[in-house]
Image (cartoon, rainbow, N blue to C red; front, side, top):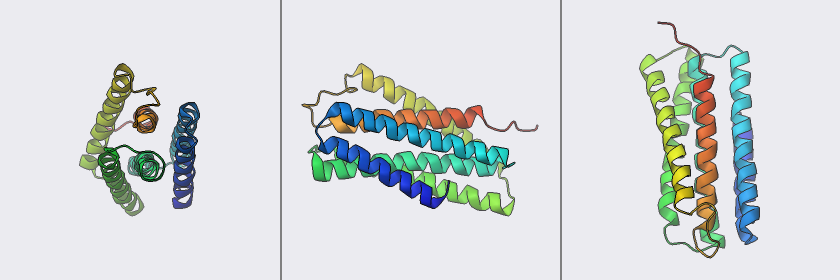
Length: 193
């Protein structure tokens, strides 16, 4: 995914959910978050398909997956930041912004490292194995998070609670990350022993 497309998707996604929260219409906010996250998943899948059909190796695919994951994490961080600084009030917002922002940064760093390796024709089996384990862990974590949000009656959240918009962002961000992770695992090249 080009940097321009990545930044455009991020800007549109953040603007949509912040405006949805500003409208003070939880149903609209949920719909916009779902559409935005579906867009992220489709963009990630199309990019992965493009790379695969072009003969890209496992390192380039890992870079693309990490970049797509960074997009979702950055969207969550910026959406929370702008929503809770300018639109709604909730005391714990900053902790989630820092966490999601840090994970976005790690994903971007990993994507850049893997991209450099792919361009140089290098393949570090240990890093690819680590990437696979991290994708599996993220998939499991996102499924657990989504189930937890539903079981704790946080999705959908009572709009009288100050964190209603955050829980929508958490839920659909987790769904997008789970879908991106699943696609990466499902379409991973088979390794030769």
